[in-house]
Image: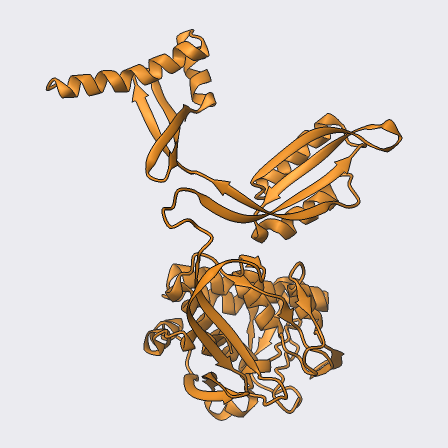
Length: 417
């Protein structure tokens, strides 16, 4: 369904097939045709595996990884049992993708998606990630499906990808291990930190493959925003249900950004915790850890807490894609047992960095712009301090020395050197 929706946006299927052939895998054909569900027209994508084609039901595939030397089941529409045949280990699939000639962007995304599936299945089965093995039919279908989506997204090259709440469905799903409740165990693992809902459909609506694609590709899960719709694509599911079985993909232009580009607007998340039982050293180490994990800003503010105890308000600003990592660190690396989350909007000016040089060495300089007009500049403290120590100057004198050389060169150039 994801492939169908992306192709429905207008992507060239010829280029897609050409890129997929760079995997050097035989025994498949990728077909697209027009169909409709609930009166809505879209594109139905089918991976044709020749004699195995009857085993493929693209909109609700359910692959299971398993320990090596065990069969891996691939469910079809009737919920039939496992099929016998060759196996592909996760290591084999990873090597196949790494050795292919697909674009670097598509390769990176495909490996990320498959890695997430392998890790989730390893956790479900309690085995090492390297021991995960896929049944030949399911593996080949997944390779074309996942790598195809990665290629399509690399062809589109969106600035960012957003998604609303994910419908998981309800009921049960039949697999090689028996009848399991929906969502399946691997799907739950892959959806950690993702806003989800259940009960909208009496079937499995998000498989491990679909969950892994979302987890690896979506920058922000939100329904808010101001945008201009450019084009809409619909991926048609195989099953006919009371509600339209569709996947919608929209190509949009963000209208939150001013037309002049005078400043940048970002939707971020602010984490805040009140802590009264961590030492100054421990807080300092926490700050370093949070910055290393992708926090945009970490600040401490003194506070008086209950029973008049002095405490610290720890504030962490982060992009949505780093939220789960920083949540985990707040619980594991700080003494807090809970924290507040607030969606915030940050406005910031464009910055550019250049390097000034002279007999004294080099110094970095950051310049802030309002639109295209330079607003102010500042020399990096570390470079000013280094030059001040080396030359036996104060910080102010070091800054004058750094800025004097470029002015001197300009005058010399204006007089013909």
